[in-house]
Image (cartoon, rainbow, N blue to C red; front, side):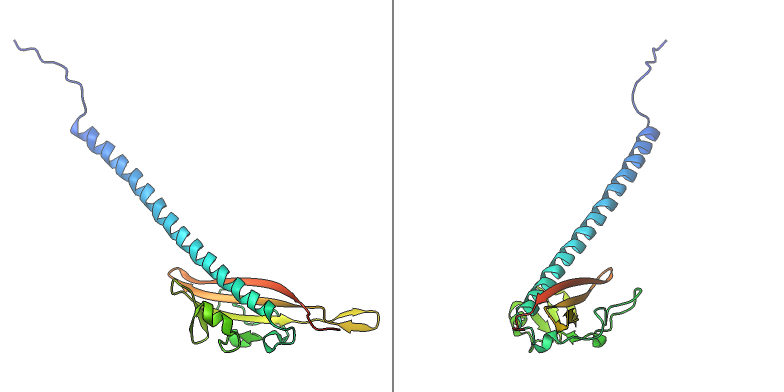
Length: 174
C-alpha cells in the first residue's frame, strides 16, 4: 500500500486566476501613467503659452501710451472664441504683426503672424484695448488702459487658449 501525501501548493487554475487579476491591476496602472504623461504635456504647453503671453503683455506695457498698438476699440472680448467656436482675430483691435513689435521677433520664431516657441507650437496672438476716460468733476482724462490679450494654439487634444488682462498706466502728461 502506498502512502499518498496531501501536497500543499497552488493549482494551475489558481495561478491563472491570480495572473489575470494582477494583469488587470497592471493595465490600470498603465492607464494612469498615460493620463499623467498627457496631463504633464498639457501643463508644459500651457506654461510655455503663459510665458509667451507675458512676453507680449510686457512688450505692450513698454510701449508709449499713444502707440498704435494701444489704440482702443469697442469691446475687450472682440475676437474671442464663443461657446467652443473658432476665434475671429480679425474682429479684435490688434493682431500680432512682427514689424510692429520687433523685439518679440528676436525672442520667438515667427511664422506669418503667429509666434512659435522652442517646442514648435504656433500661437495665434491678438488683443483688445479699452481707454475709458475717468471723469472727476468737469475734467476727463485717461489714466490707464486695459489690455486683454488672447492666445490660441493647437494640441493633439484640440485647440487651447489663454486670456490675460493687464493694465498700462499712462506715461503722457495730462
